[in-house]
Image (cartoon, rainbow, N blue to C red):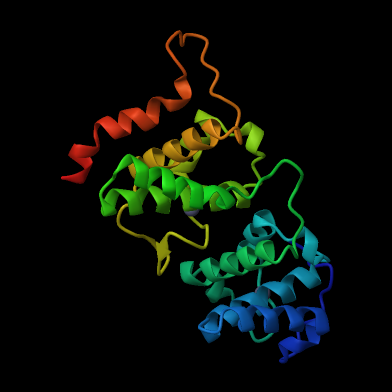
Length: 238
Ligand SMILES: [Zn+2]
Ligand SMILES: [Zn+2]
């Protein structure tokens, strides 16, 4: 990859200009427990993005993937850092901040599905899951919302294929990992089950199009997974 600007970075990250500096200051102010390493990763990313001519509003997961592969000649930063999963998780966490603050532009049609998590949690409670199952479903729903946002998937395109892609994705979402590794309860089947329930709920709410199945002649297929999971909850609760 050829950098737009080949001049080496100085030793002071603040040469990125006041905008980048302000961003980091805001990030730190809102996340006072961030490690020095996480802040350094965010600074490194902004320095690289600036050299590439990527303006803030255009920062997205694709840009971060490019950053992960760049041949680092950014002065104080090291290529070895990029190979560390925790480092890249920190960069993706910074993208989440930029999304939340509306600093990056979200394409039309891509919804922030996390706005429905509170209502989804009420629904899960009403079904009567154990605390463990409840926490697992909600956690995977949050993960799905994050993944769909970072993948820039319009809500009207979400279907069973999307759920399958999610269940098998190599997680680099900035959440759901601990020190760069999967945490318990985040296996492929857990993801599929959690995302499936959340998608069913979103269909029920009219946020996502109903599932279209040519061979489905039974009653409303949108609720199948909820009821199927509900019927098995005794087993899951045990
Ligand atoms: Zn670099
Ligand atoms: Zn993920």
